[in-house]
Length: 382
Image 1 (tube, rainbow, N blue to C red):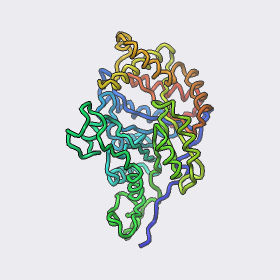
Image 2: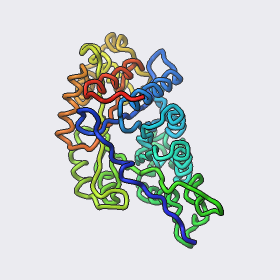
Image 3: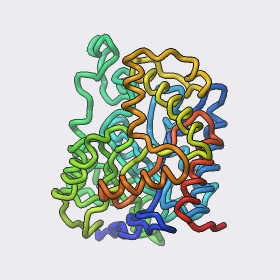
């Protein structure tokens, strides 16, 4: 039986720069929860930011997958994306990303096929190979069916992390999305629905498109894989800045034209926070750094207030971490953030900048995106 294969149009990947921005601007949202706030508050902030950035010409809005972190309420990207789809009409929505080793590929194909049916032509499927959490939580997510005795006593990475199988999982997911397992394959008669199989049923009508696949990474592995497959690539500059240029170079060197892209297309995630007052920006990013210190030392919690961070006695080691961490956060007034983003674009040649603003207050985060939009003269639409 002949099958109709979904395609991905290149204009579903490449954005258009707005105003005076050097490249398209987008948003990465971790749905952060501040002390004294609830997950409901954080999700309301996400809706407000999505609606604001859509009205100001941002290209896409992605949700990250993280687990077992009280200050990050983005454990279920597909659920949040469905909510955002109901509150927006134009901006692209996607995962930044789904951590594929945590999930069965068929489940992800079904979830994102459903999202595509909800918001046709607006869904991206960004994929990562890390768990997005610690090893014990990864095991609880059934990435590895291991007894507790085989986990490191510190709660570290399971012996078999699952990430080594990422290329095979990616290939399986792609087959489900395209509904093109070959004859004789054990999954030949299994179909991800909503999906292309509906077009082959009597009277069936199905969109010929499916969510574009993106590979995410913080090192060279996914960069090289994305290049060899001719897929778009997203690099986590916001927490792996030292690897950004080498990874982008590797991606471009490895790139092979595909049915998806004729030329490489890479975005980078950037920590950026603009405030009306420079001092306030410093207060906010110091509190966010304290939150990261606690996470890195096995004490994850809600994002502290700036007042809590000011009262905290940083040890010399914590002080050095905060200094190093915030060196890669572009923060300050709108003009300072615009200048920092322009410089970063020049250094990396990224095709798109995806901004993530980590702050205790949802209002501060919302204002940051508004200030960036104003600094670049982005249009206002309704």
